[in-house]
Image: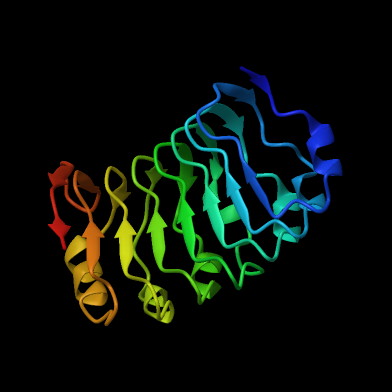
Amino acid sequence: MGKIDESITNLTNLRSLVLSDNMLSGSIPRNIGKLSLLEKLELDANLLNGMLPLSLVNCTKLQLLILRFNSLGGRLSDFDFSGFSQLTKVDLNRNLFSGVLPKSLFSCKSLTAIRLARNKLVGEISPDILELPSLSFLSLSNNTFKNLSQALNILRRHEKLTTLLLSEIIISSHPTSIRVHYVIS
C-alpha cells in the first residue's frame, strides 16, 4: 500500500524494477527516466493512475514494460515508443488508455508480444503492424475498432503471428455497434 516514492528514481543503476501486486496508488514517478539502465519495468496489478510519464522515453534499454491491471490512462498515441528498440513485450492490458494505436509502437522492431486489451482504444489496425517482424502475440480485445475485416486481412499476412486475441471487439463502422469474438491461436 502507498505510493511509489519519487526517490526511487535516484537508484540509477537499477536494471529491473518489479513492484507488482502491492496495491500501490498514485502515478508512476515523473522522473522514472532517470533509471536509464532499466530493462524491466513491472508495476502490474496495482492501483496506479495518471499518464505514462514522458521521461520514460529515456529508458531506452527497456525490454519489458508490464503495467497491466491499473487505472493508467490518457491518449496512448501521445506517448513516443520509438526509442525502445530493445522492447520485446508491452503489456498495458486493463487500463484506461484511449485514442488510436500509437504508430510509434510499430518502430519497436524487437516486439514479440503486445497486450492492449480492455482499454478504450479506437480507430483502425494499421498495416504498419507488419513492420514488427518478431510479433507472435497480439491482444486487442475489448476495444473499439473500425473495419475489422480489413484488419484481419492485414494480420493474416503477418508471418510470425501465432496468437491473436480480438474477443469482444466493438466494430464502430456499423450503425449499431457489434461485438465480435475472435481468438486465433
